[in-house]
Amino acid sequence: MPVSEATAKWVEEQFAKSIVPTLVDYIKIPNKSPGFDPEWRKNGHMAKAVELLSGWAKANLPEGAKLEVVQLGERTPLIFIEVPGTGGKAGDTVMLYGHLDKQPEMTGWREGLGPWTPVIEGDKLYGRGGADDGYSIFASLTAINAVRRDKLPHARCVVLIEACEESGSGDLPAYIEHLMPRIGELSLVVCLDSGCANYDQLWSTTSLRGLVLGTLEISLLTEGVHSGDGTGVIAASERVLRMLLDRIDDSHTGMMKLHELSTQIPKARVLQAEKTAQVIGDEVWNKFPLQPGVSAMAKDNIELILNRTWRPGLAVTGADGWPPIQNAGNVLRPVTKVKLSIRVPPRVDAVKAAAAVKKALEKDPPYGAKVTFDARDASAGWDAPEMAPWLDKALEAASQKHFGKPAMYMGEGGTIPFMYMLGEKFPKAQFCITGVLGPGSNAHGPNEFLHIPTARRLTLCVADVLATHAQQ
Image 1 (cartoon, helix red, strand yellow):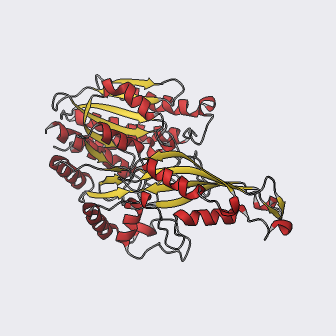
Image 2: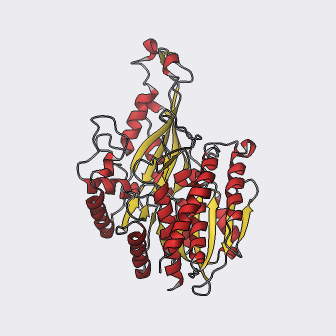
Image 3: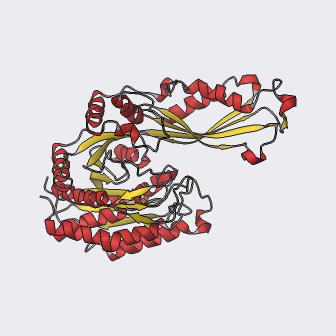
């Protein structure tokens, strides 16, 4: 049974009067994830964000709920909320998950916008972290409150908001172990940290790629030398970089070469990609802020979707060793260091993939160069278990009710390490992985925005799913 029209109106009012204003304050806080702010404790931004969000949550807790900010040693904090059930099977627990840490600033914000400068334009709230995914704690508690407002049943719920997701969720296993007695046996996981291919219907994520992050360092000289003297005698470190990357990545096609990075794509996921391509068409690629004349890597939208979700891909996301152009003298530089971000498909062992990349890059270095690859993070991807008929029907009904269109399913190219952890610990649980990161929302990049109507409708969909779950 869906929530009533009166409650839908109440949710709309909550967003306008309470949730969006608090998100505006949240965006102002530069609470970068620990991987990007090693001095996060000293700087205090994370603590301020936790205080803001937990303060709102305490003021909006369902009756009987308990909130605790858990802090284990020097780890990042975690907000943990326990909400007693009003129905459902004995022992059933639903987990609602999100995070409050943010990606770094990134350049290229258009005039008037900035990562810590919240701006509302029409239906969009611009600023870092609103969509990825500061809204999650608000949506989780508001969905539960919506169910209760209509006196519909819901199972016991726990809300978990971590502060280390953008750094690979390195602190989360310790918290899960610590909280296991209080988490209980999960029958449903609702994750609000994913994407949507449009803002017109409910999208559920069926798979997530994993991630291998590492720093590749190349050095042939102990100090810089005059380029006129050294060029043609000693190889430039950047040329060695190109040679090494050719070992793992085909620069002409973008396809990764190491078999340890690939897997057979399940037929069901290919069919989902075909349906997604039919619905969104060229928006697979033209949603990106392309320069005039730029085309996608392939002409077939189905192949582009599979590239994004079930095939590995390489991006160089940072570099050291290069001076700014205005200070770049005629010097053969002593060292080149780059950060590699390698997305790996679901079902691929990320640890073995990282080891294969390290072996390929470090073995027999050209010209005897000093080469090291430091794989600092290897996060596994995730492939959803078979969906229960009740959840399939609930998602379809919720999408039709609140969006007016059918529910859709697709894989995502990003990584949510927590989903793999939960899948391993709770193999019988059902998963509803969804989110508001749609066309143009540009999480991690400039001009990130939260599409407010989608966040509101998604909250109502979650409420309907909670009510349906309790009646199984």
